[in-house]
Length: 147
Image (tube, rainbow, N blue to C red; front, side, top):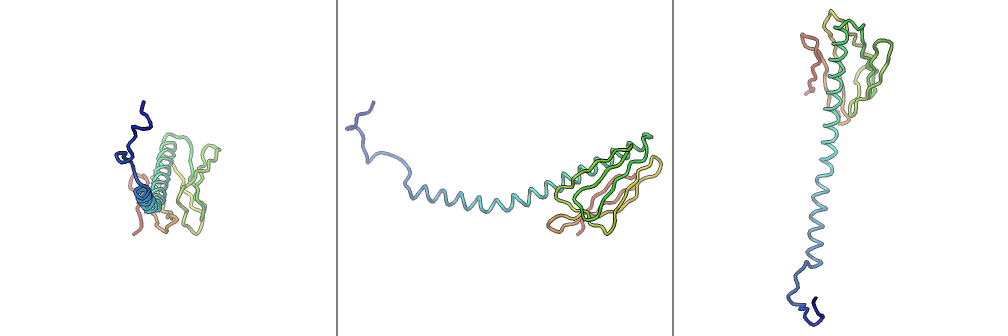
């Protein structure tokens, strides 16, 4: 145990108030620079997740149709941030986080077991970027960013 008389004020180490203020200022400046980039990255991640979800749904409905499970339909209402799935009398609303359907009229994609799906659709992000949805020769979805 130290006694009061053994303390030496000259040899004590520590940070001065000025040093603490400088470090906190630098941390706040770095956080201020990183925060706007975080929003951009968050939007890009949401868009990629939405496109992956749409691709997964597309392939699942295509497999459902090939298995003789009826004729599933994807419906894209214009100007909305969701799409609808109709199959076997059921309807499912799927959100498109970060995307909006850029179309003049409602687009429907009907999956049948024999014909590959041929469709074109454009999706728009909040920043104005566009993704063009088409299908390849095997009927699989292909997303291309419009340049």
